[in-house]
Length: 424
Image (cartoon, rainbow, N blue to C red; front, side):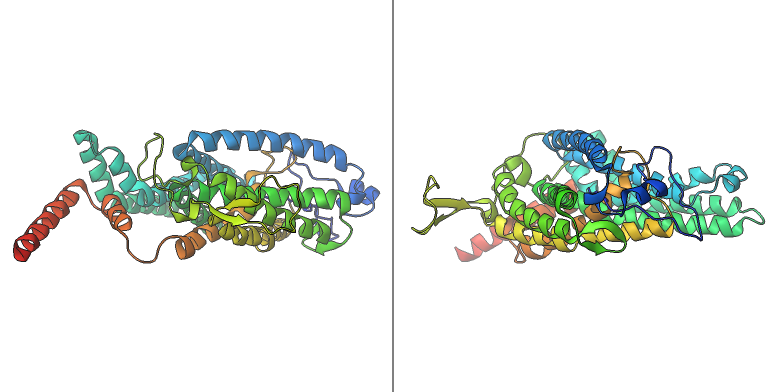
């Protein structure tokens, strides 16, 4: 949730900046009165801070509640965020005059959006859905047919939208319509690519979603407060209120927080266990070596205020340091990209759905970069590369139908029986 505390866009002689109703954009005359763009010199910074703080408390509280509710609720939250992001991005290039002559054209955008959603989540979660309804024969057959014909269904939904687009083409509006068509597809790629990685992280274990997301929030808040009180040196021209003081202070805070949060989150099976179906029941699993504490004895010269000379460290905490480093150094470039994008379109925020913060897309710019990295890191360095019994069973459960699983069971029993007789 990246707070673009530095996204004010100065007016230019060549064009007037568009302001969205309800946005927290600062008018040019106010910016001029404040002297410059740095937060430390902003006369209205305390009012802005209170608005941001109030919104942040509600967002963090709601986020914590959804994490407590579990995997399905987190997935639902991701879907809602996607819808808000798509709405804001669809509106970015929208022209009211042209839209009045194209009834139903906006509806076409959402047709493509929900088709993409059905395709992405259908492929990702279909086998988990099958595992959920295995005991109910009717639902099992129904879901089995959905899985079997899922791809062809999505294809025909897309072709229907394609034909709809062609049939609505109007003379003198071709350029606008084709630009909207291309813009819609770019939005779908951006929104669903990162969200697919996010949802994959959730079902690998909430830990791999919660820790990266929390680090971005911490980095965002720390950068804002360090820049608020100490920021003097501008960091990058794309974001005039970003400062080196805020960047460095946030980096140190984030890396330390990563080490501590990994220890705290790693002690709860609710967060570390993967979810192999779409149920909401409690999870119980072997957490694996990454989440089993290792004990280290502190040297004699260490401060005496430590109650114990022995400390417990989870191996996953060392991985968390690398996640914290990425969240501090690389992920903020997602925010810089968004700032440059908004400057190109002469807007302050993508929307105004979150008071003091802008729109949902403004909060998700760094999260998108972080979610992709967290998934790639997990698959590359956390998931065992050599096959284990648990991995083979997971593949059988997630990728084979119930009938295929029975066939494997019978075939395996036959092979074992033949070997037993052969040895005797």
